[in-house]
Length: 615
Ligand code: F6R
Image 1 (cartoon, rainbow, N blue to C red):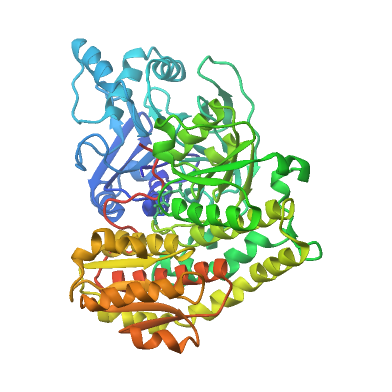
Image 2 (tube, protein in one colour):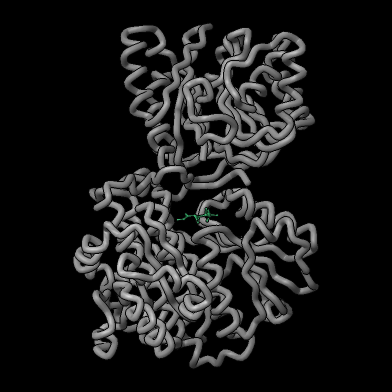
């Protein structure tokens, strides 16, 4: 989704802005632009496509110009919502007077009405965007005080925004504001960096302020953040927080792609989810973030989980864990449906929002809906300080480190791990015995080593991927714990390789999709030696009878299934929940190698965004 970076300080702004835009590239975008403030003059450049195109323009157009020495500015990566990805629609937008330049994430819902009103006053629009409307609205209300004009304009808009803007009449100031779209202020030495994402500013400072919804901030070049206030101009105080990861975590570290790096980071990421959180003597999880007594846990009589995409697949595993280990009724909901259905939230229902970014619009809306209906709402997020993390009453961080690749990998496996620990903790307050709890703790602890073993299969998986790279359709089938894994495997393949891949419950094949099976449609069957294996073998026979090539995932040493497959990916022996994680890792590698072989842009697949902050 769109990204913002803005700077005011002593250094050449364009360098910091371009570097910041590169850091935001992973979020997905189709054009970019920047404005620098050279004394009292706004200089804007915009380009369609990659940030490198913009960078080239900067070098060509501003060679030895004062713009290159300007020490404040704003920049943006745009993911098209209103209007095509063209240069006119790219940000920053400038108002008709040429004084104000603005970048905007989010959607102004009443922009059509505002635009008509402004047009009737003679304003001209050069783009199809809602953002240009906001820029001119601020301009219309401007009367020698840009801060006041922003406050008045934001009172009139409906929808969501994260904005940063500069005004040539007040070149020593930079203004930012948020409602529904994150804005973070990085406090450096004699410089301030504003960004929509910590990764764009962590290179310069780890001291940050996360703006809350409706916050507006004015930043002066010399004094930095002078005041934060809300839309009624009431002063608000926000804590300065320390970012707990560094630039290295956000770089490729020798890997060809972020996705591959993040796949290989999983042993460490998984370790971080349970470090200090397991009590092996008592066979339970600690999870101090929840701050709950067993008495309170026993009162919970249903878990409603909501999430989107990959996080939804992790949630499905969570549902199985709650049922199996804690005997707790549990339902998984598409967050987008939950918010618009009329969900029943009973007394003692726990609502659990699962989101890597903590910014997904539908998941956030579901959080708010569940709160409105009186549920206790908890969050499982990776991004510290994200909106969902802050709006939920309790929560557990994944501690997976920054996930830069658009395709989610380590967030999924860490979500599954945290859900397993929750089920363990809840289970120990119900019917799960100490010895069963101890066993589960041991399984959890063994996971990082088993993933390392799994990763050693990378070369074999690559060979299989190269054999199947040219097939344009594919099915993934699984049962039990392997069913959500099949869905996740298919999602990963389609999003990065653009192969049409469908994940199905193996039993559902016969209810329609089997009509599509033929020689040109391979089936990836998850036939690990866990519950459901016997049945899936029958399903594999059905696929073979339709001439589909079959790739199996199977437990190492399970020679019985070997003859059924054309190709086989061996998964280390493990208990069912851990086998689900290991198999996911294998399928992540498979998708990765197929996508690379097809020449796809693995880290930034077409049309996709890292955090989906619009509905
Ligand atoms: C797929 C992927 C998406 C996200 C989904 C939810 O690889 O990354 O499906 O899982 O957009 O995002 P979060 O977890 O940030 O709420």
